[in-house]
Image (cartoon, rainbow, N blue to C red):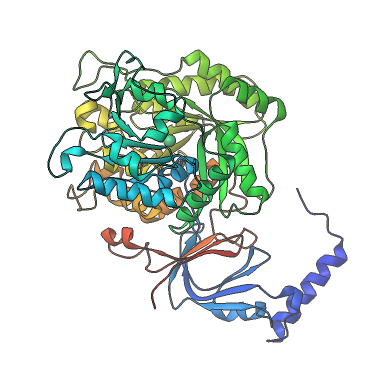
Length: 567
Ligand SMILES: [Zn+2]
């Protein structure tokens, strides 16, 4: 909206600016910055070239970016100044595809990976339980009795139940195919020796016919449905933990791909209390009742861009590792298998059409080339359903293995490719086995998307991958693992430059969540979301990008993370 300031106000503003710049030290209080970061190297993203100098912030917005001398005009009696001593500053990084709520759940799980004995697992669980109100479920994962000294048989809940009595406990085994529950959990779920084994699952029993607390496969699924979701208070606590975790790693805007009504309530609770320190863009999960409700109400467009709900997350297919991604031709390492579509093309097109009609953005998970084909067809049908006044920013999530003609079609349709650099480096040991040499031409093909003129938004899919954008930047420019393998990078022609990588994690991701007018670059007028790095991720040797740490993270000009340096 164009501002309709009376002319006199504009003249007054000009006069004030002129006065301030002509007479050093005479800045009017209302013009002074709240904070000046000086002696830094600033990467605005747009334009690409860094600026040596200062950045000034007033009322949460950037009011100056330029040489150090020019910043003096913004220094008033109450201005705080931080000398960066030459450190690098980037815009706050943005994760276009993540699961903040899932990260919160992962962060509070007891980590039992690498435990050397059952006693050690119990010790960790008891310590976690001591921090939680009685009755709260304690969840954990990662135990493996094969790593424990002595007997390699499955554990019995007896010792665990004796140590943790006031909290129900659920500990998933390292492979995800078994869980150990304590007596409190078994009681809470109404499970005892009389329970029957479901098909495809077992409740293990001891010599007396009593449950040992170990649940195998479908027995876990049966029991899991009875585990209550976390209380609203606990859900909000986890979200806060997850947000702080992200801020400490330089993320200032995250997404939550696939939220339920209960999850939205947890976000609202935190945001209403003024305790959501990060920007979050939420995407509704594909649930008929939830979508009907929101399509009726319309999207929530927060003018401040803190908590936005304007997107819908749909699924076309599964994942490549488990051969659930849908392919046009069979898997190269499983000739009878085409993978599977988890939604029909008609379903995707119908929901996408309704969503777009109600003013929502659509993001479709598509991994295999058939998944991507079906997703693109659905998005095209939605686009044709009405005349667009503006770019609807339809998205494909992952866009992992695509036929080359579909990459072109995605670009022609202005569909955003929402891709995760660390997925490529996680999958590279086996992706070639799954799809074969020829199909790799359109696999994790970031540079091909860019060269075709496409829109690329980067993310991590945390907690599937770690929530550290430096890992994504490193994968994007190197296509190597942390040991620098393979030499030269995997499918190296798809590597991107550091600037392209930073763009994908800032402005590219901002466009994917409709926030580029507020964030994603360092520019006068934009919100002051930025990161001060302990080393310059844009110039250090490639492998050291992952060592870069956020010294300071700012959102809306507020310091929301300050690294303990031990100095
Ligand atoms: Zn995801």
